[in-house]
Length: 382
Image (cartoon, rainbow, N blue to C red; front, side):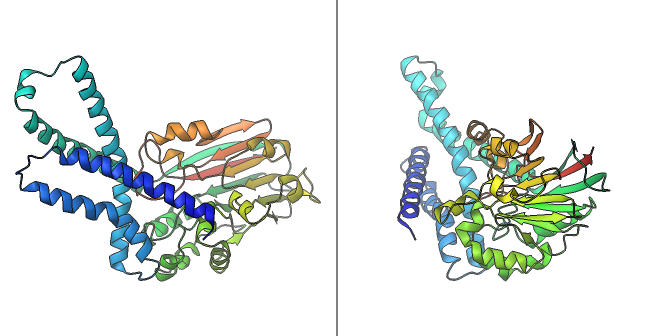
């Protein structure tokens, strides 16, 4: 474990601990000192707030249904943390305004402790509904269809039906049922080509092997095959092990390499930016060296940075994922500031760009402010 990762882990843990402490203290203040629920609240909060870390750590050593349950509870708790934090900050802002410009009615002033307790229950109920709605949204990915024209010839081929599924995150949260749903949805579109732009696995390979998810993903069917690139999560869990597993289950993994389909179309797969911690990944120009750029060029690059590089290199279709379009509101506004395209379609010169919000996501199986999706891109060659 390198120094930079330890520093990153320490920062994340400190932030997690600080936010949980703030939520815990503000929640505790809602109870009367003699309230019988106070002890229950303390014990429950401590246990739930530790489940994510306990599950993620123990599943590496003692994987079981018990560790799966811990990870599931802890993952949902991450969503609860966010919306509890937003609710408490809003309430604190209201309290601060009331401190300088009193506007609370007399009833609240005279029964302030009871008011705080009712507010506590209301916030828990509202946040629970928000997370539940987000989970339903997560469980129902949509099929987004986009038709584009590429002004190049592809031999005798006049059209190409592509299905794209990024950020599947197979693992403890995304298991057999969700993977089978993916396969069913993708195959129903009768794709000529299936493209997976990274984060197929969710860090740890053990739950994928234990549930034999590879046998489910092998059932993807396309005339020209299934091609993929690594995402940052394949590198977190170990890129070489992920590589071996995916290739053994029918995935053509492109690691800074090019595949030619139907003798006329170039599929360029860039290694994820994470590889730069080990070595330098190749530029698009280096990857295309020796190939005919008059042929249609489709590029897979997990993280959608420096899209101008694809435009300058003559790429016709650039496909990425990674952003999840924020996954949880209001983070979609943050990803829109970070990435030129946080989600959806954009044309840069002659280059068509599509950044998918992903089929699943990391952490909580919850989506708010974005949708899980499978993308059906229908290309016409002109």
